[in-house]
Image 1 (spheres, rainbow, N blue to C red):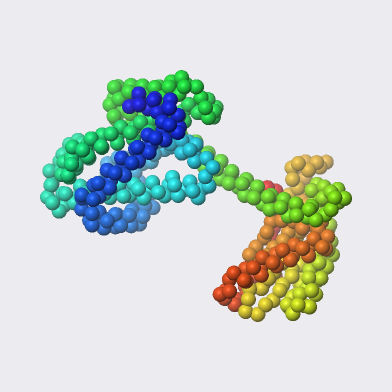
Image 2: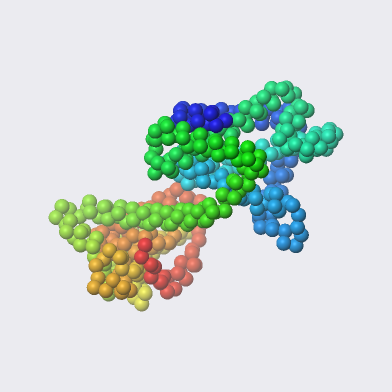
Length: 444
């Protein structure tokens, strides 16, 4: 197996590991479908549905079950140690899957790596396990129990003895077990090689051969020294320190997703800024530059909302009234926010609001006292569905009107594509408008 894994690693990802993995999956699916077809098919379908429901119903209870009140060997032989076994496999399996999944979305990754294999595992256990149970419970082959308990390694082959074409299926099973070992070994060797090379994608052949053979010789030494139990104990023992690494990795992933969210907000802001820049004309680039490095005070932002914003809204209000569209402009001077509301009978009202929102001064802004808690303020746009996370401070009246019309156009398109929308009014929006503004959020 070590030799085959080394050959696969030397051949590379596409020629070696990929082809071997495809062969592995083809053999597994073929063997599973064969047992499903010649076995108790109806019984398997019924038990698959029932077992899946039972598993999902008890997963939380059994996950946290430490048998604090009653003790048995089950807790040591299954729950905690199977977690350790999974964690021991996670370093190279997780990194290998991440390597071959580059470019996929998180949704695609979860579906292809977690959801589909989980359903496949449920099917595998149901087809093989319930076929054996049917032989014992229905067909009376009770001797199968003793044969499996005396030697777990022959359980699968004892099952095949009671099915057609047992010699062929046993041979396919041996090949399948070997390919499972080889694909696990070559993926592990590939990840070790990549880590040792500092993440380099293409490494020398001798280096890949070294890590593949080293991993194989370590496994051989453990098997010779203490048998399968020594190898299993070593794997489970290695899981404890890596459990800490997994926690750190989970925190790192959470932080990366937060940063990605900030990038999305920044992109939206950039798109609005670019639109204004394209309309500003060639001679107003200095005004745009001043807006990028300007962090207005509360008084400046409040004055902007009370002048440019509200004047632009009232111009839109008068133009809507000329088209027989009732609209109102409301001002909340205490909380420094204004909003335009377009009221249409039997339709969802349109609301465009500009609200004062405070932020901590960015760290890259030079100040005399770097430890000061100075804040700057933005005139952010809010619609009925919530904040849009972009700032309109520095827009002139024409820019304000254009932004209102952009959002109003989206609103009209929503009404157009949703002709069956219910006539409703959002009372909670009125509560939102009468409530205090949000507390200043920390700097991203």
